[in-house]
Length: 94
Image (cartoon, rainbow, N blue to C red):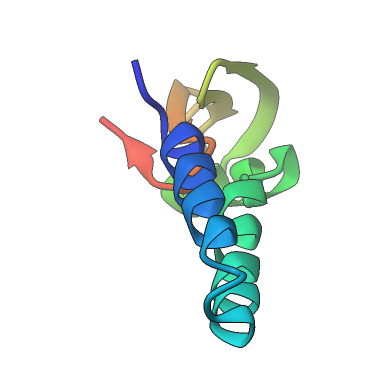
């Protein structure tokens, strides 16, 4: 299964191979791809995203399995809520 990073790495390789033909363009474009490929949501960012989903909640646990964070939050009413967050994009999964 190809992931976003695999695709971006392949695109980076293709752009770098064009570097001899158009050095200025390839260098500028390749840095954008490298930065995008390295971008990932940190655990602190995942906690912040979960807190914004469960207003007034307290984060009690965070774990990462593959490309998904599971942030366990205790809501104001005492209910335990698991918020699943994509580690690459920061989007909340349903």
